Length: 455
Image (cartoon, rainbow, N blue to C red; front, side, top):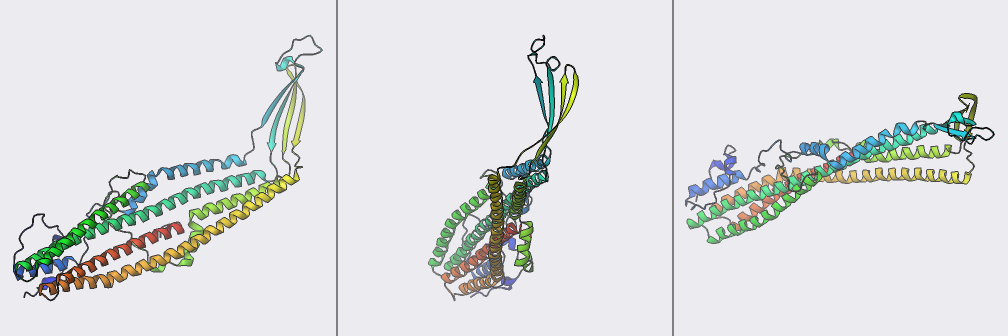
């Protein structure tokens, strides 16, 4: 019986060459221990690495940063909200400005009663013409309060635009992680299909040498068929993930996306302090900023409603024209009389209730975000620990188990079913590690959405 050479654990073996798919044309596997030993060493070394996706750096979809830049520049909903914020900003100055003055012209005795002149509408040919120029003036700081209300609405519109981008960015980050997971699962399964093809060749070689039953090669072929069926579903999952990502980018569902290259590195574990992140969310989360701006607007409107109990005035000058000359001048003062006290009290109670409601709504949002933050921090920690455990222990153990199973199968000490089980274990370990990495990225995206900025 052949003993494996030192090539089994030699890192200098040309691993990329081993990852090349086999020829679609079957070739008769040469019998003999030399072939089997070289095959076992090459296959075992191949399992030590997970082949990366093809290089396509710089293409849309290859990295997360490019997708975020694309969405920020081209998303129509985001552009609409930015324009709305600009429009709200332009309403601030007019809100506190004086209203336009009013000019009133009164023609008296247009029929020229008591004179021989014919009726007329010309100011110089009627009895007299009175010009009244009036300017409404809001007192008691009402203009400043109206400006404050408009400024709060502008801040709210800008914060809503920021919240829209924050939400969109989070969804893109999550969709990219799902796209990476789908592409990675497909890649792992294709490597498993290639491994099973090599295992089939090994079984055929042993069968040709009278060292194994033909059933081993048949089982390898059945396993390849099952993996081929899985690949169909995985390819569909990948297309769905790409379509979801394109929808978030406002692109056609079938638009081409490059293979995802890598996930973002996770921040250091000591940077995830729940209390500090909760404070950052209160200060930086745009949804919280929108609610706080709305609260400020409600408070200013409450104060404005209270000051409406004081009258506003209109002042004016009144020159009077007789013939072609201004003969007399007058002054005018006009004010409203706020006598409907019950109506005003109702308006004040309404404004007070709106302030209380908005304060409660703001507190509810902050409480909700703190709860979501704790949930996602726990999920991120679990995903990190799971990925570390799989990468440091389970995956190396699975690789060692498969290498041992290959050697034992070569020496006739285990059956082919044991070899298949070892292959399934390492496949599951790789898939679980990839899932944990994607889960950590999705949790990080949620945490960044809650905090309102990248970590």
